[in-house]
Amino acid sequence: MQDKKNFYINGQWVSPIEPRSFAVINPATEEPCAEISLGGKKDVDAAVISAKKAFETWGFTTKEERLNLFEKLYEIYKKNWDEMAKTISLEMGAPIDFSTELQTKTGASHIKSFKNILKNFKFEKTLDEEKNQTILYEPKGVCALITPWNWPINQVNLKVIPALAAGCTVVLKPSEIAPLSSMLLAEMMHEAGFPKGVFNLVNGDGAITGDALTSHPDIDMISFTGSTRAGALISQNAAKDFKRISLELGGKGANIVFKDAGPDAISWSVQRCFRNSGQSCNAPTRMLVEKSIYNETIEKVREFANKTKVDSPNKNGNHIGPVISETQFNKIQTLIQKGIDEGAKLVAGGVGKPEGLEKGYYVKPTVFTDVNNQMEIARTEIFGPVLSIIPFDNEDEAVKIANDTPYGLTNYIQTQDKNKVKRVARKLRSGMVDVNGVGIDGASPFGGYKHSGIGREAGLEGLIEFLEVKSVGGFN
Image (cartoon, rainbow, N blue to C red; front, side):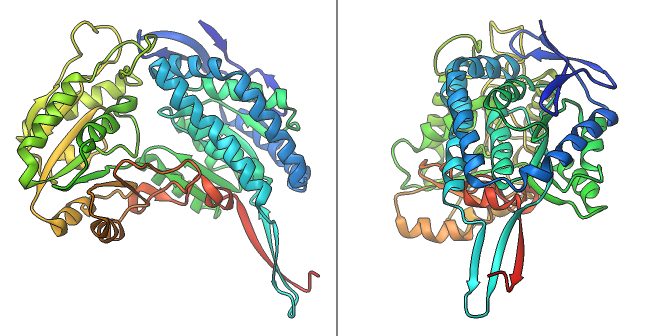
């Protein structure tokens, strides 16, 4: 078992001031794979003090200085690619091929993308030469970054890299149940030579460590990815002294399948819902199907769901692994049973573990049909490989059902009618719309409407989230 009890503060690994041991569980074996510490208020204070002091100089470094460090970090990251993939697979159960080709790859892509965005960004802009009006873009200050377990290094690099690119300093609190990839990143940051205090990492839980961090008077901004419930609590902390906030929260994406959908629409839709064991906030978990193709679609979905393999993360191949924890497994089982009790028709999967996988938090790929949009399985973010199929009569009804949710992260459209695409995409109340599986590029802004959050990550907008705007008359 790995000993990972130290925190990274002020450029070095230090022992916790208020140690609380916590076992990181390998979800494939249900056994501890590492021991970390959960930080207390004094640990948070030390990290914030370090970041605040570092901001005095880092906030005024040149773009070239930051770019040089990001270039070094990118090369170090690529050198440690396999180790990162194995670490993510160990801590959160992603199959090793998926961890290598998607989980680890997204972390690299964000370093590269923000490096290019920073290179072209102008922190000083003349608004009106005649009136001598200038806009300055300045770092927001010391940032608390709180990240989830489902796409660990993806979410970490979506926050750490733009924050540092903007000139902010950071205290990162990764999820305590999948912290090992973040600790590996801290080692890379150290090797790249980032100045002391610019990047700090304190592991911990939400109730004590997270609360101490988000309520700390010297934190200027909070960027959080996680549940809508936790996002609301963090917003309350931030409101007390007007901290800036960026929240990427839950989703319950609708995937509208029209009768003229492409030939691969159904297989893609099932795979996209189940990948990462359904643990993606932007998963298309509500499949809305036009009634004229409803029955044939159900048969195709059933076939693809039954072909979806569940197996060990250590094995190569295109399968799904376990979900992250016993708590998550039990939540998914409860909601699957709820769907049965509510009267939805179970056509694949169901409660219990797949045959032959009694050890580990494995969930059967599950499909419900004849779902209506008021059922709990259609309204709750299950965060597991569970798909609900809902019929619709026409375009207007499909849009109405899709928008009838507290969330608004990603919706999906399957049709070959370009005019229909433009009509429906504009009507969907979500921050992102994926048409025919084209996908949302890693350099495009990521975020949602309504209960899915505030602000955007990735792309130019992801950098701007960490910048204040200052208007200056007479600067030149």
